[in-house]
Amino acid sequence: MGEISGVRRTFVRAAMDAPFLSREEEHGLALRWKDEKDQVALHKLAAAHMRLVIAIAARFRHYGLPMADLIQEGHVGLLEAGARFEPEREVRFSTYATWWIRASIQDYILRNWSIVRGGTSSAQKALFFNLRRLRAKLSQSAAADQTIDVHQEIATAVGVSRSDVALMEARLSGSDMSLNAPLTESESGAAERVDFLVDDAPLPDEAVGEAIDSERRVKWLRSALTVLSERELNILRERRLSEESATLESLGDRLGISKERVRQIESRAMEKLRRALLERHPEPNTVLI
Image 1 (cartoon, rainbow, N blue to C red):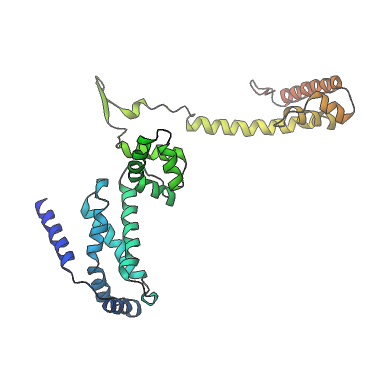
Image 2 (cartoon, rainbow, N blue to C red; image 1 turned 45 degrees about the vertical axis):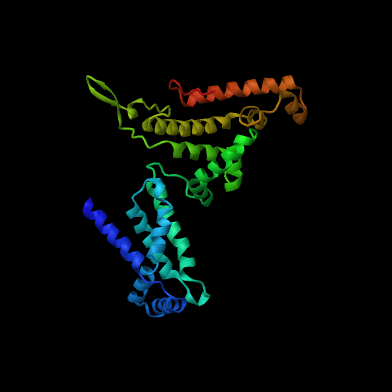
């Protein structure tokens, strides 16, 4: 551990001792890399900006991840910036590289901060990295004005829902918990958290069986419907097979008969359908209506 710490100190010291580049030197190195793919030029350009990587990585040290890892990820972003930099745009390399370094470090934090993967949209990232700062700022105002809804204010500022803010705050305030962590000791061994999780969903074999049975029943029903007359089928569809069931009165008006006659036809059609199902599939539990 001491040796690793020493290597890290040497690396940081070397980065801090690297000479600054003038605009002309920076531009020349960038052109050599872009036009000639000169690896030495890219190395000099990156080495001169490692202090920028260290400074940006230090801003994220409170997330509990090793500083050396943050610097390494920042260096990846720095090299990406070097590969994409266009010197003809007359923009300083440090300005361009800052975005890539910060993005690389933030992506690393989001991947490794928790075993539970958080949101990866731009709004969710902004919420993750700005929640503590915004909450601290708004809490002072809320102390003076009790009507301020801190969660809603943060949601509006970042562009997410209020529930997203509450969920992210809960995640940031708690630590990861393993489902295999022991809870109690018993004669058979330690009980784990996963042992107390209950899933009300059917087992996979039950779900597959239900899907197969449902498909079979639909085929039976379609076959049995062929015994009905056109008017009987129309009434059953309107009364039993539609999401919004038609009333007897509305069907009677549409067909030019009384609502009592509609009820009689419906009842007769249901009986014909039952008989057809029993004749074609006399096994138990096949009559579905």
